[in-house]
Structure formats: C-alpha cells, structure tokens
Length: 87
Picture (cartoon, helix red, strand yellow):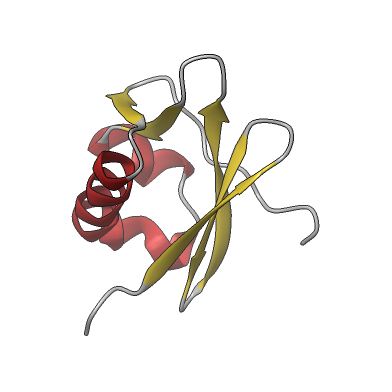
C-alpha cells in the first residue's frame, strides 16, 4: 500500500500533514524555514497509532518536499507530533 501524504503550512508555525489515515501537525519554524520530525524511535512513541509504521515513507516524502521548497528538515529525538485542532 502506498503512503499518500500532502503538506500544508499553516499559521502559528505548523505544518499540517494530511494522509489517508488522518492528519497530524509538525513544528515548522519560519525564521529559517525548518520542519522538525521526530526520529524513528520517538515517532513510535508520539505518532498517531495509524501512522506509527509509516515513518520511513513519511520521512522520504517530507525530505523531498522540503528540498523542493528550500526548507530545512531536522530529525531529532525531541520533536513532537500534534493533533490538528481545526482546518
């Protein structure tokens, strides 16, 4: 099964990630445009259940999106994943 995802920057320094299984928000700072993705270990702890096994596919698609848009991608052990409050 292919992992489909689209990325939508939003006010308050957020990147909304919309996937077939649902949506979540990553931190997206604007001073130097940078998206923060939890590393694979942290992802397993903080990601929505439906997305836990999708880290590799998400990382690949997010890395490509960031490269195409001149945005830095930081993968670390402290980043969070947040529920979208409203769209």
